[in-house]
Image (cartoon, rainbow, N blue to C red; front, side, top):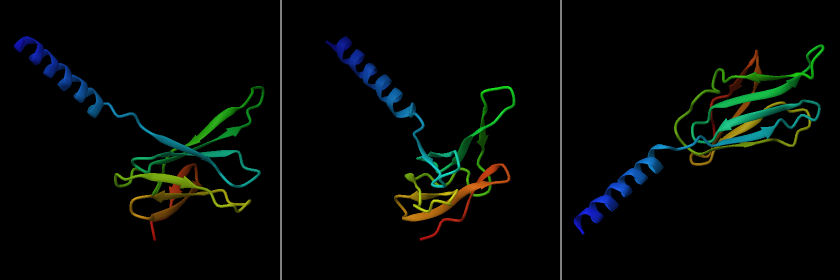
Length: 122
């Protein structure tokens, strides 16, 4: 009986460690609202880190995926719960990064080959 309890306890510890330590990144994707821009923004929902990609033409090829890494304000933020919201403005190339817990938001857009974001505000 003691062996079975120890075995069950060990299994619970191992399973708990796997579940607690192995958290997959959770991302959200949103197209820019500008109707003639083929850009999609990427958000790490836990850290607020931003990125973006778009289609680019390549001579003699089917094209390339052009991606922009986080720049000023677009990097890792305080741990929270972030989401993306697009305005309905047809000429807007950026998106809003919102912190659902703090109620703040930033505007993020591509500038000089990086995704930059304004300081968070309410």
